[in-house]
Amino acid sequence: MRITLPDSLYDAYAAHLGTDTPPSAEAVERDIIQQLTRFRTLHPRRRALVLDVEAVEKLLGGMPIADSADLLRRLQQLAAIEFHRVKLDFSASQLAELKWRADRQGKSVEVLAAEILAHVTREFFYRLPDAPAAAAPTKEPAPERRRPAPAKVG
Image 1 (cartoon, one colour):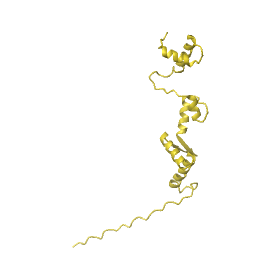
Image 2: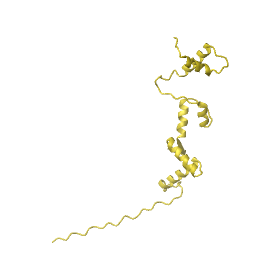
Image 3: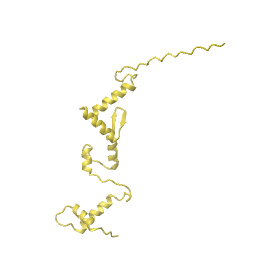
């Protein structure tokens, strides 16, 4: 089977080969076949996103990304902060706000998150022996309720 490509598309693939002399038609065809082979499992109408893998790897700490599942796992890790067995999931905008607040206070996101966790622990878990010291909330006495005087009959 033969496929006809517009000249501009053919020229783009030829330019990717990066040679000083024009590449042979066979070399360009091999490059196109490699590209099509890479995407053969992707349905033509399914949305796909092309990323600069090296830039993403650098952003994610420099470790190589194995595949799309690995990338998704790493992104999920970025969107959560975990302390011991407590995992707090955040959206990207919430993480950005935490970063903004931390920067404004001259702290790292980790330090700010630890302070938030300590605050939550003090507020909700004050009776647990391993919770940071905090005064237990005092219960205000209920307002005195007066019964209405019995109605006089007669």
